[in-house]
Amino acid sequence: MTLFFTESDNVTSYGYAIDKVYEVGQSKFQSYKVFETLKFGKMLVLDDVVMLTEKDEFVYHEMLAHIPALLSKSLDNVLVIGGGDGGTVRELLKHPNCGQITLCEIDAKVIELSKKYFPQVAIGFENPKVNELVADGIEFVKNSADKTYDLVIVDSSDPIGPGVGLFTEAFYADCKRLIKSGGCLAAQTESPWFEGSVIQKIYQNISKNFSYTKPYLGTVPTYPMGSWTWTVASEENLSLPSDLKKKISSLGVLNYLNADIAKACFALPEFYKKKLV
Amino acid sequence: MTLFFTESDNVTSYGYAIDKVYEVGQSKFQSYKVFETLKFGKMLVLDDVVMLTEKDEFVYHEMLAHIPALLSKSLDNVLVIGGGDGGTVRELLKHPNCGQITLCEIDAKVIELSKKYFPQVAIGFENPKVNELVADGIEFVKNSADKTYDLVIVDSSDPIGPGVGLFTEAFYADCKRLIKSGGCLAAQTESPWFEGSVIQKIYQNISKNFSYTKPYLGTVPTYPMGSWTWTVASEENLSLPSDLKKKISSLGVLNYLNADIAKACFALPEFYKKKLV
Image 1 (cartoon, one colour):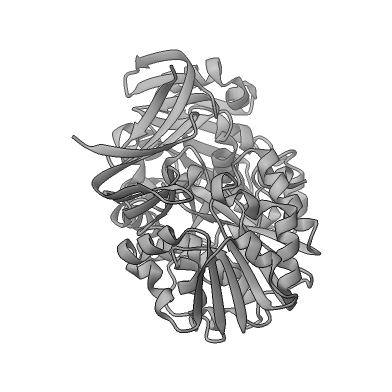
Image 2 (tube, one colour; image 1 turned 135 degrees about the horizontal axis):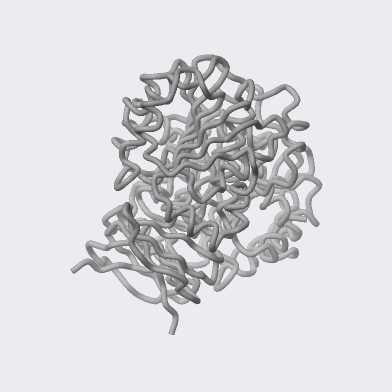
């Protein structure tokens, strides 16, 4: 007998054969499950939605961290909202010019589970540059001083449950206020295949606040429909560095990103562009 | 009660809620099912693998047809092996310079089902430029004269069942023999996330025959793991036309491809590049 964990929205379902159930429970904010899957190694599930797996988390984290880090003029002070698994922090720390990182995760349980079951993802937490806070990201940005960070990354779950406030116009406005000149915001912005109204609303909430809003794409097999978008937003029209190849090779071994992908990811298919306007 | 059709390889499963079962049966070559799904409209399933759906077939067909058609120096005479649904032919016919198309599909039932349930996909069959043959593609290319076609497109199912012979070195060698100078081969080459040995073998079988072998990527939500590759192969190092934007706009309304995507699709993620070598 093979057990499957299935993520479903009632019209589609994505199932993963599992070998072992490590832990199932309920935190103050959401339900959690940790499985050993046959295909993707260990898997973390929050509110019955796949958050990460050992085998493909590299795509999401490399794309969310490196694209804005390559665009930002400096990385002296970085803020990550959410991202309690530590994967985004791990990638940011690969940048030789990365200074302090503040990570603000609402759910201590996510950090705890990641440290216990995904040590290669949570590895960045051991670095003294990282200041790990358990707090509500919405409140944190509200109460933070203007022009504090070179880069703000919103590494949230979906716009339902605890993540919902991390997609609003007001939240992005607060993020913008914190960003220094020459810096940027980056956020995960869901599947390009999701309903147009959801995609458009997120894009509008970001673009109302920033002069330049640029979505970009990648392939994440364990997220619904297999591809994903992130968005970088800034006041200046930031460009990838002219020594892009050299910069990327200074990051060490990457499993998804390279100089070609860093440029190509901003090419948007027609069906997705139509959803944004 | 909601019924689901589920495609599964025993370690992952992809389920689609269905509203209606139109037809279920067995042809001489494979089982077939036609459903109405709640998410993707009508769906054609062959040997329990999703072949196409109304809502996302445009990605696969635009990418398989237009990229090589834009690269080929002329399109006077085109051969499509497989592709019995007609989607690739429909896209090829959008090129003002497209001449004769020969489509060689092994299974008459696929053509019949497409005409019956997917008239907007099968629409190209009505065009007098299209010569529709029901025959084994392997035998057809073996018996075809040298340098007959400007473009040969292999629009096959997976390398199991009736499609297996359409991924061999010998088959690609026959395809090459048929291609005129300045022309190319294009083939669907499976998910970049499939097992490395499968991906590498297909790539090697093509590249042993051609001087230039260039895989390219796109996102197809109803194919396993949500992204897909196609490969274009040629003796000359073909380039996209310098008036790419103009050429693409002459094709009419496309839902996936644009000039940015035509260039960006050749950027390969690191994990996939590693599988090819």
